[in-house]
Length: 67
Image (cartoon, rainbow, N blue to C red; front, side, top):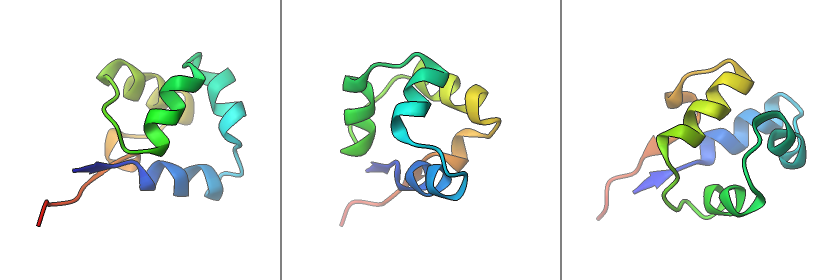
């Protein structure tokens, strides 16, 4: 399973609200909801977030093995 918990932590560490991230990236609120519930998002979305936050994909997500 892919978890976007590192993204949530990064936003907290940088004091960026989710609404601010939406404005910075142009992604939709539906896409943000997918990120919040660890659902699939395209690499295009990951690319936009990485560009806006000046980070790498590994800073946004982690792989959690299924039991």
